[in-house]
Amino acid sequence: MPDSHPPDRSLPREPVAAILEQLAADGSWAEYGGVWTRRLQERLCKTFGATTARLTCSGTLAVELALRGVGVRSGDEVILAAYDFPGNFRSIEAIGARPVLVDVVAAGWTLDPAQLDAAYCEATRAVIVSHLHGQLARIDVIRQWCDRHNVALVEDACQVPGARVGGRPAGAWGDASALSFGGSKLLTAGRGGAVLTSSEEIAQRMTVFAERGNDAFPLSQLQAAVLLPQLDELALRTEQRRRGAEALMEFLEEASSVVGPGHWKQEDIPAFYKFGVMLPESETRGPAEIRQRVLEAARDAELPVGTGFRGFHLRSLRRCRRVGDLANARTAAAATVLIDHRVLQAGDSEQDSGILARIVELFDRWR
Ligand SMILES: *Cc1c(COP(=O)(O)O)cnc(C)c1O
Image (cartoon, rainbow, N blue to C red; front, side):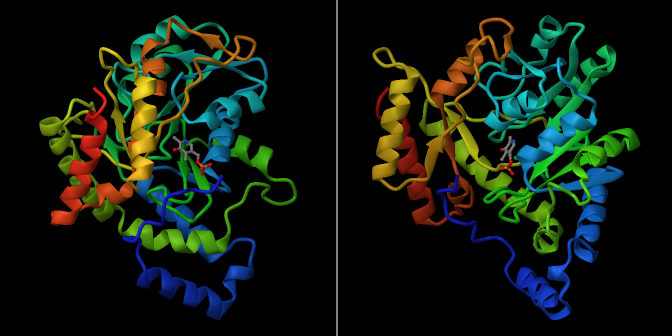
């Protein structure tokens, strides 16, 4: 599925061109792996405080390898939020394990730690936790719960490289954590991903699954090489997007009834792949109807607004177990729209604040 939005024009140009020139000159692009994949692995380990960074062909596969790495097997249960990236549900199924759906926090998109006790049973082997739409999950609280229950934590940091929670990088909290380098993600090689871990045992299990004479889910030298200059600029770019998100948040709080990703704790650093917004209900219209109108109007006005995930609350009970009524996840699935990087990069120019005003006008038109 190609990404409909245009590439991020603020991606580093000259450093990428210089590295590609080097690959062309020395022929290293034609190798299975080598200096560039090794450098990327070292760099990822340093950035995220891991001892192993296994490079993969996608973030989706990184989540599956992480689950296999922590020892999930056929017949086990894996807890995840009922609002999440669709591939995470499928990755659990791919192993023959059973997804167990829990609710997300109110007016948000991340797993509600208060639901974990009710979801737990003898078969629980792992929890998947994603940071989504600019909202950081309560991963510190979930980490403690997992430790108490001897359940593995798989952290999906695909949307938030560069973020920090409780003094640690997002992506450093899981027993195994997944990154995506897919097109438009904050770190991108067009395709690709990685699993980070500090456990030899987990790394070994992933190797046993993925090595079939060769790495069956690889990242190429070319892809590894273009990620390196982006890691050099990660802190700077995280900061730029955070400023863009703050401007957007202020604007929404003053001018609109919609709810954004909320404020982060002072010691945390958020990261914004896309900026999530929860549309309000009105007296006459439900969120799904309001959203449809907003999306149509956004398309007509060529404004960079898209839909969120569909959620798993309608999945058949043959495929999963549900905990509670999943009311917040239902709302998130019906009422979420996502604003992409073109707005997060808006500066102070008149044209840029014009975009914000036009988007907010769209949100509030159908109240
Ligand atoms: C993009 C994404 C993935 C999957 O990454 P791909 O590289 O596109 O396979 C997984 N989880 C989340 C939360 C994502 O945003």
